[in-house]
Image 1: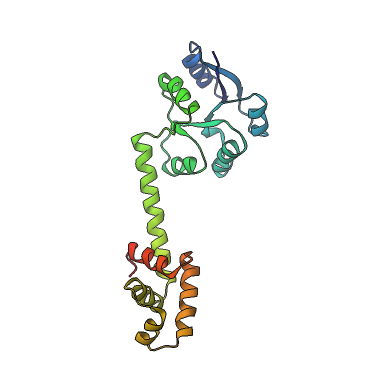
Image 2: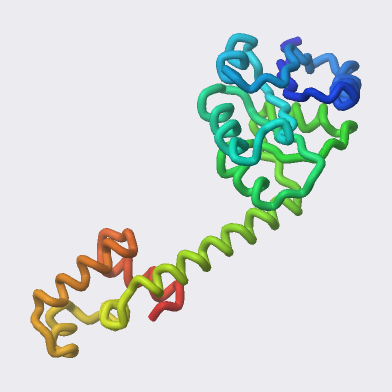
Length: 212
């Protein structure tokens, strides 16, 4: 039987014993290494042919957490499971964005099944984690909308509204009583600010966000 190779990143002896005990009778799972050393972690994982990394995220400095997660997920083929005994909504969101496949508390009895599912590349999110991610995306979207509203001038918003209503550039110039080149300059600025390539897409986005 092919075994799932697990690297455990932990330094607390009691925690190590509990995690190791939770998988010791599992014939398809083998802990091939235990370390609390984060230097050259990617090389270590590849050398041991690790399938799953089980990491106690408390070992990593707050400013380094996302960097370490990305290092594991981008530079190795291993699936990363984050272990934590605290609810940290920001870290939950950033961990999944950085490529972690699972974020769990230390409920030792379910660790073997989590390892198996992660090995099969299932992205494991509890209902709580899902809600955190949704809320964070909503928060970021609201910030983006607010930021965009602050950046777009009133004239640019009027132009987007007219574009959304189907008016052409020449017609918009006549309605606003300006030169066609002025409208073109405004549209160029709008596209830069919204990140869109076409004015109709920028208008659609602005309407969806309630800017016009």
